[in-house]
Image (cartoon, rainbow, N blue to C red; front, side):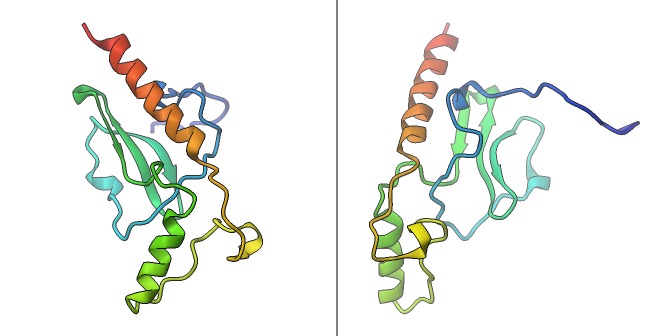
Amino acid sequence: MPQKAFGMFRHHRSPYLRGFSDSPMIPVSRINDVERASLGPDLEILIDNPEIGICMLDEPQHRAVHMFNHLEYDNRSLVDECEHDVAAGLDTPPPTNLFPNRDTSITPENRWRNHAHLLFQNWINEIYQTTL
């Protein structure tokens, strides 16, 4: 930038995220990441996490949304996957931030279901509203 960006600026908010909370909890189970430097100008990051990387991209030119994490999971999916990994001899720790107080004896709550429904509804609405 030719000078420092400093102050309050209105930012574009994707219609796909209408109704989402400011920091949604989304299940993640992946080894790979997307290199930010590899993203072309036609891709916009919609949801991101500095610790684990990009969660969702928008590709408006092709009317495509790319989700890398798992809003479709139910409250036991990560638990079941962890148990599967451990049974296979992998050193997989319990899922981060899933269990209240890290107590694996408590059934985890599904804190992302509403975001899954919102994303799908917003996607359907956006396709409907922008179809000629």
